[in-house]
Length: 325
Image (cartoon, rainbow, N blue to C red; front, top):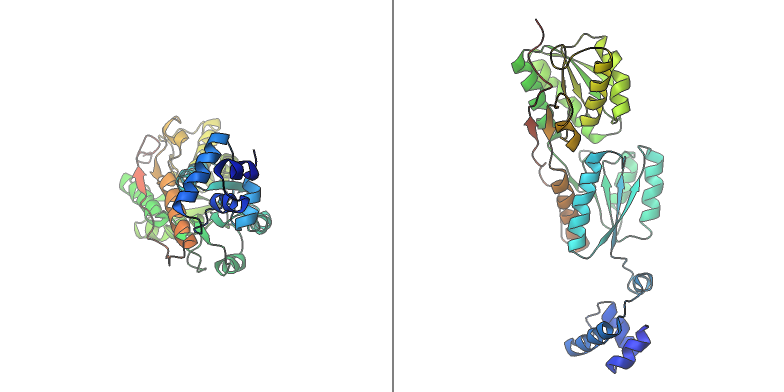
C-alpha cells in the first residue's frame, strides 16, 4: 500500500495524506480522521525513513555508553528506552568500549541521524563536551563531569555513597584500606576518589591502587592491593569487587574473616556472590528515566538545569566484618 492508495480510499489528495502522516497541524481534524481511518482499513504503514527525510525528525535518540558488558549501563539504558518509548521515540545504542577516540567518532556519526543524544558516563575530553553544549540538537549527560561543562547532567550521589562505605568500615574497626580505582576518565571515579578525605578524617589510611571497571581489572589489581596489607578492599564498582573476590579465593584469603570487601552499584550479581557483597545501591533505571525527562524537556525548548544527584544507599551484606585480631 502507498500514500496514493490511502488518498484514493479517503477521497483526499496525496499531499493531505503526507501532511497527516507527518503530524502537520495544517490538516483539519475531520480530514485527519478520514485519512487515519483509511490507512487503518488498508493496513498502510508509512516508510519511517521517508517520513524522517520529509519532517527533518527521525523520532530517535542516540545513546553512547562506555561498556555495554557492564550490567550497570544496561539498567540505565533500559530506563532511557522505556521512558523514551512512552513518548514515541526509539533508541540507537552504541558502545565506545572505554575508548575516548571511538566515543568522539560515534557522537559525530549519531548526531547526523538522531534528534537528540545521551552520553552515559562520557570518557571524552572536555573540549567535545563543550562543543556539544553549543549544538542545535539537544544533548545531555548521565553521570558525567558536570563540574567542567555546561551540558545538563543527571547523576547519583557517588560522594555520599562512598563516604557511607568508609564510615561503615571505620565503625567495624578498619584502619588500613585499599581502593581499587576505576577508569581514569570516569567522572564517577573522580568523585569517589574525593571520599578518601572522609576516610582519612575517620582515622583510616587509604591506598589508591589503579584498576578499572571490569571483573578482570579487579582480579588483576588485587595482588598489588594486598602488598599494602589492608584489612579491607573497596572496589570502584561491583564488577571490580567480584574480580577481587575471585582472586582472594584463589590465594586462600577468606572474605570477610581475613579481608573485608565492598563494591558499588548493587548490580544483580552482588546479592548472589559468596559471600554476598556489601555495596552501594544506586537507582540505575531511574537515572535513565530522569535523563530522558531532562532531554525531552530540552527537545521541547524548555530551559533545563542539572538536577540534584539521585540518592545512593549503603547495603550491608556478608563481605564485611571487623578486622582480624
